[in-house]
Image (cartoon, rainbow, N blue to C red; front, side):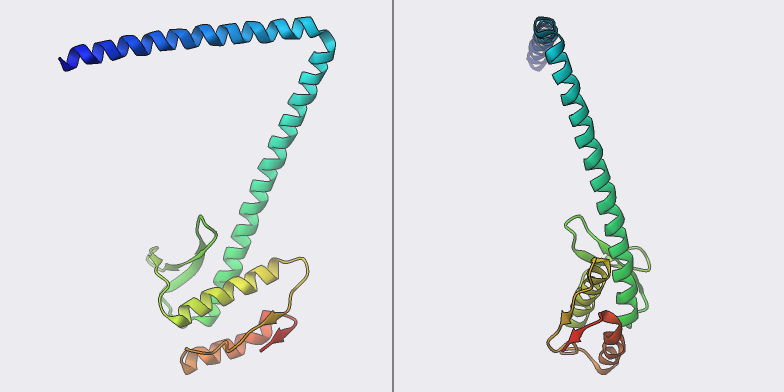
Amino acid sequence: LQQTQIQENEKIITKINNEIEVIEKEKGEIASDIKKRLGGKMSEKFKKQEIMSDFHKLLNEGLQKFIQERRKDIENDASETFLQLCQEKDFTSLQINERFGLNIRHKNGDIVKITGESLKNFVALSLVVALNKMARNSASIIMDTPTGRIDKIQTNNITKFLPKMAKQLIL
């Protein structure tokens, strides 16, 4: 019973594929006929459309390459800042995820869940510093209690790092 059903489905699929081939052939013939009837004017328009399509593709590829380069630069700068602030020696870097959030990478290669207020603060601060560094014009940074909820050692790290954050920092 199942074998019969499979054979019937295969016949249906073959029939549909044959119909698709016929439609594709007719589509090509119609497009060719349109080009012949409209002559050089349409041919020129098709060429322009093709050039614009290629140009759009090229721009999009360039944009994607630019985004990936900036993404890597931000990731590197944020990692550098994070490692200066964080006392945990088992962390090696920050990694930008698919949704442009930051993850902490452990020295064994694993992604570490960001827990605790100090880690959250360090990651956020690292991202702000990296984005500010990438900006065409350096922005002022305004912070309220940057050392709240962290211990004295980490407070000392942030205090030492604050002058490096931006040209203008308001606490």
